[in-house]
Length: 178
Image 1: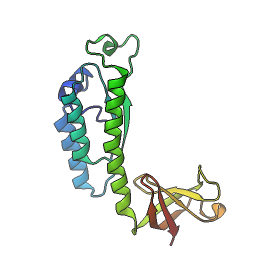
Image 2: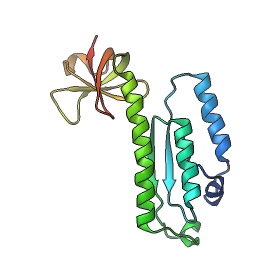
Image 3: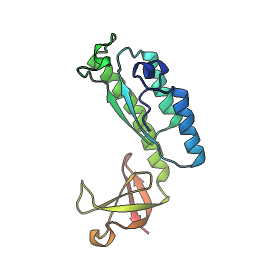
């Protein structure tokens, strides 16, 4: 669900038809209607004219909504777009710094959310051999969290499996088939 920015001023400059509070309200209503719902988002940092206060509004919204993940991009100038000609272009260093700071918040939240799953049983869809270790299998929870486990690829690929989550390394869960 693309947030883009937590600043109404920047959303207006981006020509987005919504305000941050409306975005927050929709996310909170979705979570209330379906507890445990996983929401990911897209965010652009360093849009022309973005102040530290605008950036902080984005960080505050990320903290408030506790996204399961966020794809954070630095604004990049594109020829023949209105934003490319706007005043207030930020330096690559400023954009990189904001990108790094926001990713640290997103990563901390993701790590905390993964840690809570250790010791639980999750249903996963086995996708087959892990991309990083062909001796292991990989699957995804309904919330798109990756789980690595041992098993027979011919037997488990394409199957829904109950999985005991035993460990988290921050972004990857490890478990055993129940």
